[in-house]
Length: 226
Image (cartoon, rainbow, N blue to C red; front, side):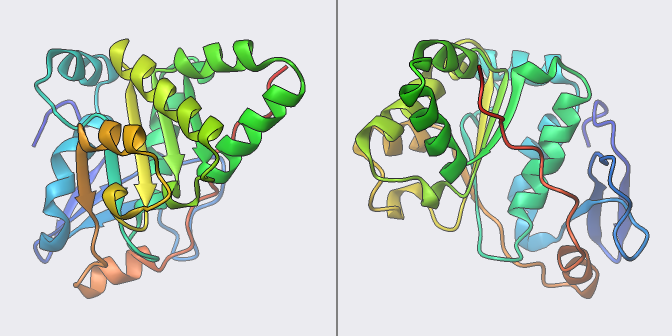
């Protein structure tokens, strides 16, 4: 277990439970802070998850050195697998430790709306620079990215810029990128260069209760930039 992980870890009946960074919202109905439960069916996500929820400088150095080959990281799973809850916890963790302007969360639909709004308002270069200078970019529900080439090209170039600068990019999707037919070849290639992990619905009763708990409020989507 990496010693730099700064959340709390519990093992109950052989199931690993990671307490995710909290938010200003109250705890769930059970009284617990948001958590992610890792049973044997999801053990492949443990290593990248512990790095992303640990020391940020260490995570950045490992990505730059190529010692943690999970960039971009794509979490794949159906409804109830916990993928959105997980990435929202990662975003909260990074925002508590970095300039909030260097950490951004979008749904794929919101990303497209932001690109369109920036284009319409003649501020696309400034918006583009702000996104490409992020240290962490999270895109939730990649399968909902619109097929318009301009949107997909913006995302592809953002991935290239962030990764080249030592930043980290994380996606969620309901299926592997190669199976999302409307993604262009270049975007699929970028995603295939990282790590894709499929999250299964937890098999244990403890895990099922955790995943069925009301999630913490989503990490705020990016406001339209001026």
